[in-house]
Image 1 (cartoon, rainbow, N blue to C red):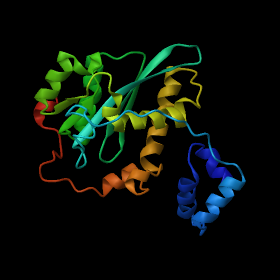
Image 2: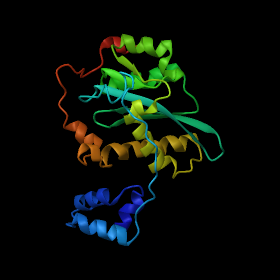
Image 3: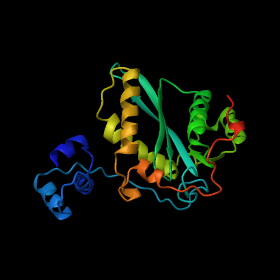
Length: 242
């Protein structure tokens, strides 16, 4: 338990029990909880004030839920700094239904054309989603991005201004990324940040058990998804333009 807690310091007793069972330790869940409390292995709990989610816009993740793989993607930016104090940004893209992290692009800054480049690559290797959800950041609402998505036949879901909870899936992902990696790492350079963050993304997709997926990994859950006939299995030709 201590070894697993060192590897996953933000995991609780329930997730640690699942990991022990996966490693062929036939241990009772109540025993894990008892030992967890006796050894004071609980992490500090953060209290967050919550806003009411009803009455939001039609594009919120509550009113417009993802119903299958590649139905709704969402993307958002985070900011971090290297050891020298220089800021860089991260563009995270997730599939809301499977919870997969499709990409975390790292750069000093992003333009609308950089955003298009990331999406163009994902559409080519993954397929085209039906919708993509975001806030009203200038890189997302720019005419170039909206025009490109319209030609790719992808509908945009812009949340209400000042309402990050309407993009709850990517906000939840951002919290995990910051809590489990960004707050624990000191990046010496942009290249090191790219390497470490991409390793974390692979670990998140293929090894991190997700409670909302009945403790499957996002990759394992996605592998078992059956696409409906209406879903697009591959990007149309007109989406592959610069």
